[in-house]
Image (cartoon, rainbow, N blue to C red):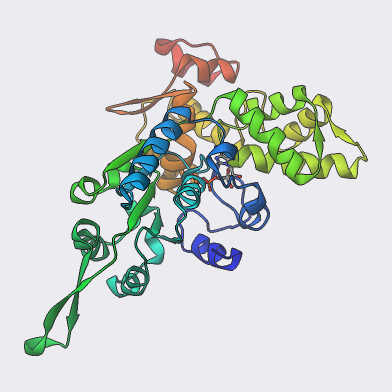
Length: 359
Ligand code: ADP
């Protein structure tokens, strides 16, 4: 897809009111679209980490190739910036097929899909990002397309309305979602392969950072790469974004090779703390700790207090805070853990929390 096309798609996405805002961790910005394209891995060998998923996909791909059949439909889930789009492009590349990419919010009417579906050749891949945001009507239109490679056209109106069936060439749908929970059960049931991408290990992120540095034509030492990796919220997109900022800083300061000092200084300046939490992470935690005495607090109330979209908190902020152990999800809402209290130098004492905050 062209950059122009990706920018258009991006504008149709959620949580992107300010396209250059980096406050929503992991979300794609316009800068990512324009500059990141060369950093996107093209082959399995360039895709670092997520070993189990890659091994499993390789087997599925090899088997499908051997049978000369298209791949089953694939559902990729996980927080933004972990490689769902990249993986879809890699799958197309490895299968030697064409990929057409779109997103849930970009498909407004079932009619928008007809052109896309009828243009697919056997084995082609249709990638739908944010598939949980498809409208009900579009979703239902997709069912027969996914299942029997058929779509129903309705022609004429009122008493003259007729439905004609149109056969499609067998294709593979790859859906990406940050929230499988929001996917309707009948849609989920039509996928044959499911993979959930988890946050990356620091070692894997360091490899990605060093590889990206090479592509960007900048030198970085191991210590610096590890530091950026530690402070990237387990997310390759964030790692690449931070690397670009550090590169700018090094360039302006006329520093030839990025070392630990340059990396740390830039990260501090960007408001990324030693634990890798950024401004919005800290605002979320502080709100739970201070306004709600450590919780539990419902995500809606939390979002309202922060003046943020609930989706931003749920899709981009909370997953990492949960994974890293700063918050817990309980039936009564989000609860700050001991780690959160300690991060802000507060004494963890569940009973005395309110007293502590009054001081
Ligand atoms: P998602 O679709 O999950 O939001 P993307 O596939 O768009 O994430 O990934 C964002 C960027 O992060 C990519 O352009 C690429 O630069 C980088 N990236 C993601 N996963 C990997 C990986 N496993 N190895 C190397 N780079 C990666």
